Image (tube, rainbow, N blue to C red; front, side):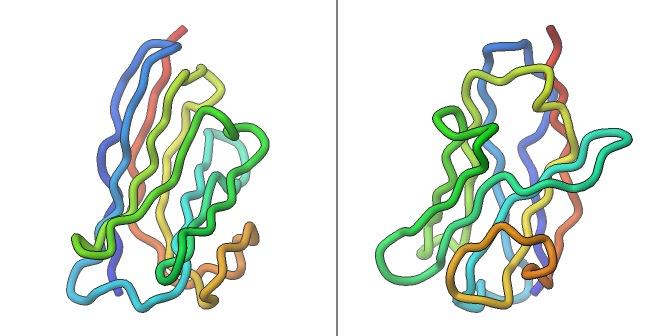
Length: 124
């Protein structure tokens, strides 16, 4: 499945953005979907993940918990990342990815289908 993230942009600190992740060519397979980010000069890091079926089960990184929320719309075949109270430290390219597992996890290696990222820039 090909994934495409969009919704990034330039926002002032304290502002909000909503990122979207769409699967093209096929529906999400039923495995978990995650968001990761990579800032310049840093390694890719986990942001949030959610399962696809049954009652939603989410994971959020400590650095974004309480500010970011991952959600899904199975009817629309979409996963979202609502980002509030953005900080300059949130500046990064954000990627969505599909896991090889049905439950959400934080490990980069658990995710096998990666989309092109979307750039989020937070100005101070």
